[in-house]
Length: 313
Image (cartoon, rainbow, N blue to C red; front, side, top):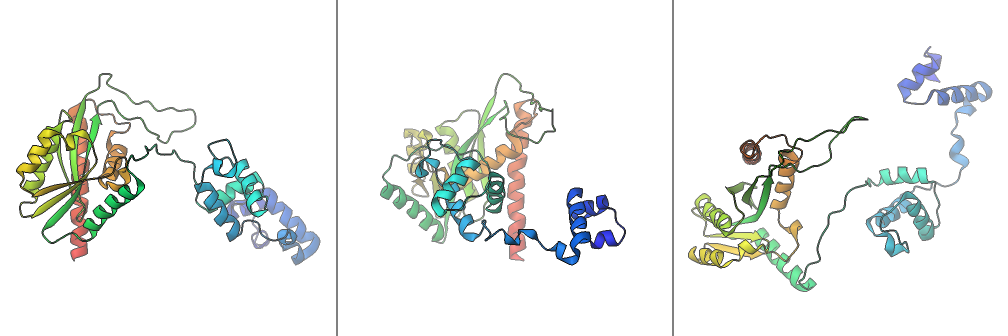
């Protein structure tokens, strides 16, 4: 009403306030008929607010769970199912459109689940190993180094992933047809965040051994280098065991329980590598692609060094 009284048109008022013009006309009509009383929110007599903290907290717990736990046969949630489930649990029914607003309020999103495989170890053995590795990281002895190790495949045929497009457009990613591969073995310093890596054309024990030698060269004064890694076969092959024995205790391998990628911190770096470099890439050959991969890894290390210098200052 202030905007209208100052000479703005209903369309201008609606644009300024991000409203529909019909809302401006409706409020103005109520003001002409009832005066200031017409400006009161007529929804105040609708009863208690439904999307209160109790409702949103229950919705958060339900969305995190599976529909089967609430008697549904469908394996994924729909808004209608959420409306009915919340009605059963706390006796409050809302409209499906209101459920969309409630989901936004708890910051829920539609995403793609990550496939996992059940660990073959017992729960106690799995948790015991994870606690040991976490404890080693928290109480790392002086002169010791701890790194997270893993390999990553680089394919000339690009990984296809989501991208923004305008309506009616489907972007095309040119693929070379015949795939070419390179392999990286990398180690992430658990304290500094620095990345150390080696490259090969084959994913074999020699690749892993080359990384261990590289770690010895990077940390010449380390008494012990602790390497946290998964159970991939090249990490425990006979030639790898012989190479580790030749390091005379300076390198110790700590194997994670099977299928625990979330405990291997370097996995996030490989995810960023795929997101920033290999997904939907347009490199014409493997040399150009590997150049981009190296540039990404070097930028990561430069960013880490700058961060440490700022903290030291």
